[in-house]
Length: 223
Image 1 (tube, rainbow, N blue to C red):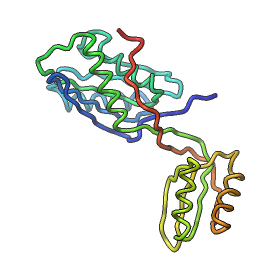
Image 2 (image 1 turned 180 degrees about the vertical axis):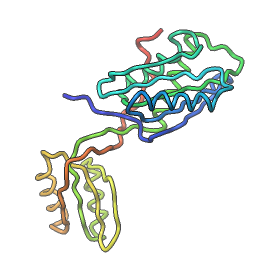
Image 3 (image 1 turned 135 degrees about the vertical axis):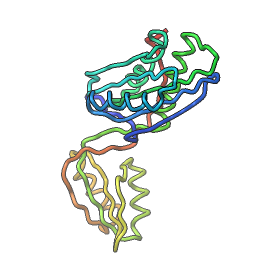
Image 4 (image 1 turned 45 degrees about the horizontal axis):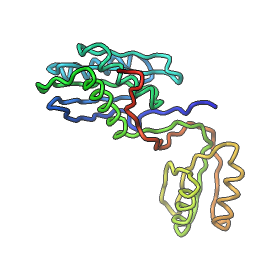
């Protein structure tokens, strides 16, 4: 079974928290190649030139073919690797992260640094949210306004996400459906609405749906 393709829900995101007076700022961005990852690292590092550290990592490819990181002056293995481990352990792909640290005067020690960098990274990912990219056939459902709430409730109860809703003389909803289940879906939704629905079967495409698995800061491979 192929592992799901998971990435962050926004193209770019920033998260910040303070740990023992040090500011930890995580800047995330979706990327598809190393040039874009390196450009982002440079941009964030330049914007935070006065910071003590701009630690970074990125992970590219459906199978994590490219993995890079830098501790940027922090003790080896206490910053870049924990950040990379958060991405890997949560199955996240095609993301670059820069974690900026403004030192607050209290030393954290090696273990404290690992927990701080991994924990802040995990919190950033959990806050921005994750999406799963899936291959589905696009179905367009057109209904009368009176059918909207019954259909919406039915779709939610059957775990079908609604990607788009348009309101005109009627209501049109876009729903991604597994190609193998299209016929069954059309029959079920038609029966549920007693035929008061028009279904248009579109092309197969890639869709992004919310991915609700809890984000972990697990650093099992680290000390």
